[in-house]
Image (tube, rainbow, N blue to C red; front, side):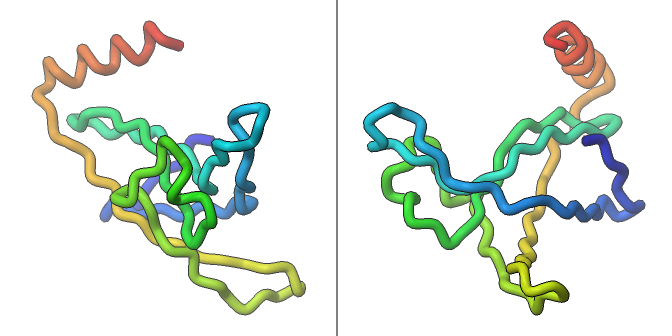
Length: 112
């Protein structure tokens, strides 16, 4: 879902908390709860990443888990008795030259 940031680069989303899921049929590999992001900004290198949501029981066995991409969920007071959480994560985009940006954008369009 496309969204815009504030002038300071801030944004907020509201979503359903993702579930853990089994990757292999025997269940030995279970993914940590995570959200995927694709970030684009003029003059910046596009970033595709995932953010892992902690606490989670599968951090020791998820082959793709990276602690540097994790954030803690903070439980909020719920208005309607359903659990609500909040998390914060800072994304850092790398500045690229205009030529580099054009090449990255062309590559992104070619893969769509």
